[in-house]
Image 1 (cartoon, rainbow, N blue to C red):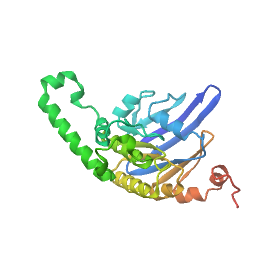
Image 2: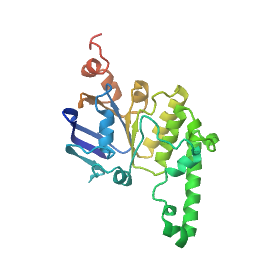
Image 3: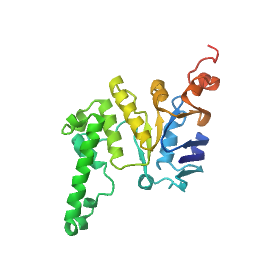
Image 4: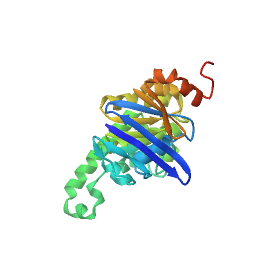
Amino acid sequence: MLSATDITLSFGGFKALRGVTIEAKPGTVTGLIGPNGSGKSTLLNVIGGVYVPDSGQLTLGGQPLPLGRPDRVAQAGIGRTFQVPRLAHRLTVFQNMLAGERDHCGERVADLFLRPGKVKAQERQASERATAMLKRLGLGHKANDYAGSLSGGQQKLLTMGMLLMSDPAALLLDEPAAGVNPVLIEQQVALLNTLRDEGRIIILIEHNMEMIADVCDRVFVLDGGQVIAEGTPAEIRGNETVIRSYLGQPANS
């Protein structure tokens, strides 16, 4: 289980997170929704090691996560995507996938000279995984295209594929459906359902409520840096506090 317990964070006099507590279990998709500026991405940045919280605790599988160390958080088994895809636009789709490989022995000069056989074998395995993953994402025909030539939705799929090259136990996904056409959203939903079935932990920020309803097992609603509601997608849709705060309309309208 991935747990964030009583997380608080301030930027100067602005309290971005106020005692936020969420839990995400293996084999589930946990949604984070709320108005812009409610603290959703800030919370992912805390979990991902980008920000150090003022107080609170983060654990994965019962073990404390390092605070403020994205590299060590990744080593612990947590992967993260961002609202704007972070890709090497002048490298091919396939080359970007290989960049997602973690702890490749070929990155160490000594191994290149002392263990060339191991390096070559690992390169072959990484290439096979990248090829298989691109087919799974529906991007196999784009393998030799430059990443910068992909549509926005395809770039978001590619970032998810790069993330999976490191085989993370938990995925933090920040608005994967934003600006994506309905066909690619369907591909994302199918992928998320498969990843859930594999037993991964998925935390998803999304404004597309149809996608939230399709894939999420549990939803936390943030507003003003606080959790104001928690429940199944159906329960959240009927929650009067959420309707007033998130949808900006009277509860009885």
